[in-house]
Image (cartoon, rainbow, N blue to C red; front, side):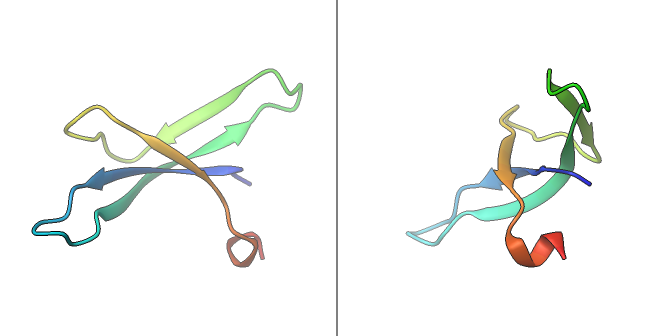
Length: 59
């Protein structure tokens, strides 16, 4: 089970919120020494944001 989801964020226009697109997940290694980031897409600007899963996503 992933511990983070990976997103790319496009800036909103005219004061609107940014548009978040999930592009992958991060899985921790069993030894606690890092993990694996699996991407389904690449962001155009090269910036990837990792966010912890929320409780409702864990279930």
